[in-house]
Image (tube, rainbow, N blue to C red):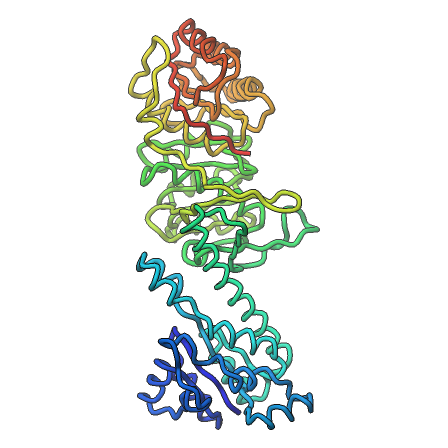
Length: 510
């Protein structure tokens, strides 16, 4: 048996090579890997000696040779292949262990394009692809985590076809992800992130029980190990729908930095939000907005779930809690509740991944865009458009209402009072219907909207929404502006004694 080992990530490779050597395997190696193995007393043959061809062009060409690729690719059960290999003195290579130049790490470390280019691996992907193509005859190893199992299977003689096939699939996933990363980087650098092709690559975290509905399959995939590093299950199992709702709640709860924010979401739409002096008070105020919808919803806590807050939440049924961290005594509060699911990021505060782009499937493809983010400057630089000026609390409420509106399905209107969401209308085909729906829900809940601030994620096309706002006592309105009837909207605000501000930025969410 002959193995070729050439790795950039050398973690575990000495023990792996030692295990192969003890099994009687002849080892071929290159450059730094060869030196490391030799320094550790492992007998290896340098590839250039094996091929009788020196490394060339500063190492750009070293394994691109018929004795390497012929040794990997020829079919052992094809007599013609075997005869050709013998004719050209090409020995078999039965195992290929390769991981690739650290392209991404290089782009993070430096902006030197010359150095970045030199960290695009050529020989590595070629060998991996060759070995994967001939997986029936060659074990292909691209993952450090597979070393131990491969050694065990070689000892036991259990490297069966299914195992080899799984290694082959993993290898093509690996090389595809590597090439995609390079293409995306080049488009990011030279085409503003929007090249002729876009590659979206993610790694599976786990299968969900099913998709949105029981007849659909589902799974969670992650970018850059975000969920592996920031998502721990404490109780229950996350469903497909749970995960989309958790995302909506987390986006909202993390919108105010380290503030003690609590968001309540149902079917991806906010139904409660508050930022008070502490998390307990924030939850109590958030729940007041719409306790009916909060039943069976998702609660996101930007901080620690303690026993006091846990007991309060436990007064109603919520399906999911996601908290930055959870105290053991808080978890015990829910021991007898079989249906509740609890997850944590094990951080001091909830964190976002910070994705730069966003995409959505449409039939036949996907639409792709820069991720929308509300900038604090939008509030700081908003323009007063009418005769009336908001007070300090109303400005604070405007900050909250504006961010909630940006994270709520259009068309939407958001009413905030004393740093808590008190009414919301979302996903309507007209903005005035959203305003009416929000007011009707607030009346049902017995909530007083007098003195609150209203935010709309897009401009009001007519004054009717301002008229509705005045009837319930809205004192401040924040919106982008930009309607051909802005003058009518401003006049309505002046007429009703409402402070009106334009941000100049729209935040549609479709």
